[in-house]
Image (cartoon, rainbow, N blue to C red; front, side):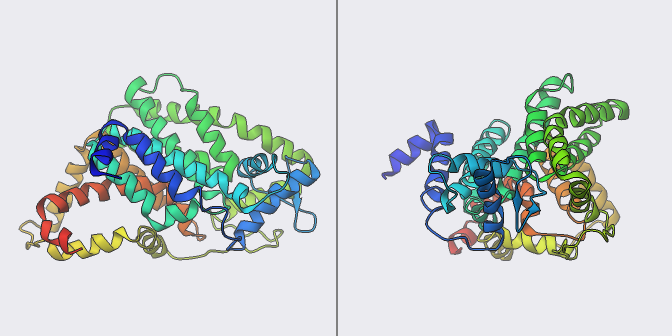
Length: 377
């Protein structure tokens, strides 16, 4: 493709160009390989059970053990498999691939309208090509779908404050957060509202009562859709279903013992695990980041540490709203997933679009002012 054509697409049809790149990078390949981890067939088995038994509320898998996770991802897998009558690698991975494409498109549109467009465009390219996001887009898991609902839900929460000043609750917010809960449980509401609450506090624009009411209204309205499924599943699974749901969603988070639950909650790691997985998940761009540090000129600080920290805090408080929101989201997501003992790299994926925004800004700085380092890399 000639350079003028690429320039035209970038200048005139940037969203279309990015979506086409996303489609080319995932859709042709998701059906070529067999299931590669134990998690992929485990998730696909739920969709298989739905098609075979007709039970789309609480299907049984693993020798009559019920699927305790919310079923939205499995509904989509089963729906994609209906035309051919069976679940394949392609149809089971299709929801993750489509969620990836939607996430990238919304990220470009959201940040492209509010920040330097070149920065937003580079950020989406970093997301498309980093290992963690691309891998999640091509696997039969619920994490890519959850990330898409949470991130777009955060975008809508930001717009609610920015455009409406917390008046009313736009229907998109309960729809997105409700779907996030139907994908993987209460974290789909708790995490976005935690981020949004901290952001509102940092704005210093609203009283505590107004913030509390906004979070309360958004939270309650977002419970309607998931409660329909939880009540229906409880009628089928009874107390055994409730015990497993409590252990899965709250037991591991608050380090509670669950003697009646006979399975390993697993994935226990320390706090530093989150930072290591973020660095690994953003490869190859973390390599560029650490390589570029050798081209920076370091100066001995002239101020005491306390004054430096105060300056940093003041700079954060005076940030543009979009960057403040991104920073708050990034810090809150990492902090949130540092609390439970159970940690996995995919839990941190909602932080990736916000990391990409700052990494894109740093990339532009390196390109403009440290050209030798960029050329060598």
